[in-house]
Image 1: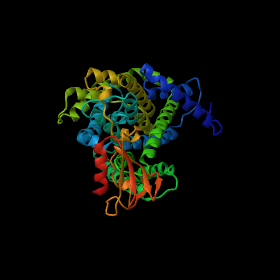
Image 2: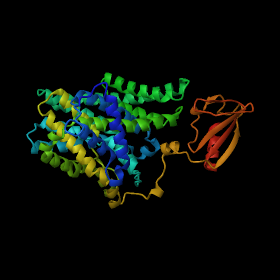
Image 3: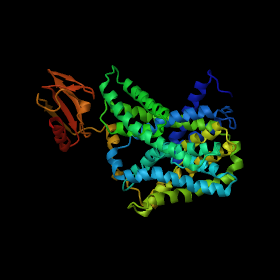
Image 4: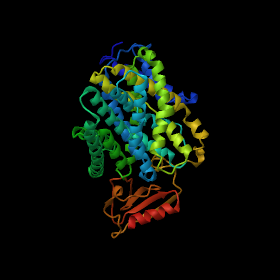
Length: 486
């Protein structure tokens, strides 16, 4: 079947529906949902029962980049700074030094066991050097794993922030493969430019986005998530245009926004959570359609050898070396090593050699696909077992809710308090979003001139207003009073 304008919506919606239904029950059998999406795509492809012909790496790469924008941005929005701050150094080292060490270790091994040149080997190592944000986020959250000692934020920060490093390394070694006359020193300026411009642009666009979201007055609440989507793509494309790393920029921008008070923040977060899942499904289905299973069979042996080396040697060595200067129990390091899931991101990066037309592009793509699938099968299905075996798991009842969980929670508040606002009160003539209101309390209603109004983040508190505050404990009420009168 050839995809046309007439049938693409029908085929796409059927595949999406099947993916959601199958994914709903997949964890009962211990199979990661994302792997099911890949398999459905492969079954629907030209080598499968669906017979859909899709052989367009350029379109697949475009879909991949758009999907990664949503996935990384959603992950950044969910990242709580107070949780990440204690492990910031560990996460940064893992997402930079760890990625580099993984690429070098695996690339050297590939050079020894294949007929690849050294640069082709390093290119393959770079493509699979980062952990996959979509895989780690979805598997950790769907399994509701409660981990000890900040392990979970470490893993989520690493997976959310290490794709930019792998992307830069992929572009760098692809340049060396194409231009044989260049040496390693020639790619250093590009590397520094990508990372520096990406970090600066991410923070700058984050501050600008907050100002726009909170200052612009839109007539409909539903337009605010659309506004954030526009700001996300502007951040990525503008950063890429000036030679910076767009993936790094949108992640930093999202982390900044996720830790600020925004108008209609709950609506924005819920929409991005749904869109991130949609993009994960679309991404894995697309990559499943792109691959030809018949071409995977011939590289099964070498693919398994490289995959096992990555899981059991390259990833553990890079983690242990990266964290050697930090105080951390050995079993925690081992678990971080095990949660080195490869998913859709390496497959997306593997389309770059295909579009560049280098000699071994097809073989690199097929090996990367095999590594990603085997990683999700071997590591994705054993995260809970390894957590219990290494004694890094917490009982579910001890799991603490982070700020995002609290924002999503619709738990009833036990206390209700009416708090009057006076003319000399700090909160007078200010928007609710600008007050840094405590997260354990909400302003349910405002009594103004003997009428009750339902507030939102853009509502301005006036003199003589009476705030009807709901909170879960007396301490939160006290925090509200401090916030209103500071």
